Length: 131
Image 1 (spheres, one colour):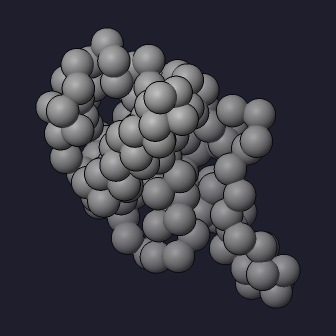
Image 2: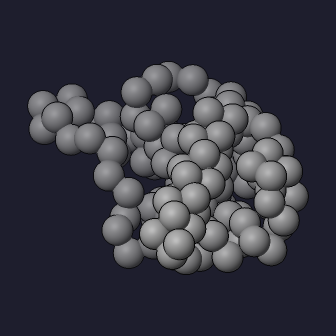
């Protein structure tokens, strides 16, 4: 019975993560996510903490920030457009999340990435593993 519960838990978390990744610009509050996968907010939080080590809110913020990093590195979209596309309420909210995650602002990240790319290092965007 316990193995089956583990499969169900894994399925629910994968379903939530897939939803998050494909709906970054939408409401991803714990209540919206819980409703999407058919569990209570409390149960959703337990699932995320157990399986991923983060609350749903922290996971969403990290996913949005990482998506923004990819867009900053691969496009010339304005930072405000990237913020909107990744579900941040404003460029300032993106900046705060970015500084928390990467230790630099989005504009400095873009400049540093462009400098590395033009030097032919071929570096890909890698999140700070300590965050």
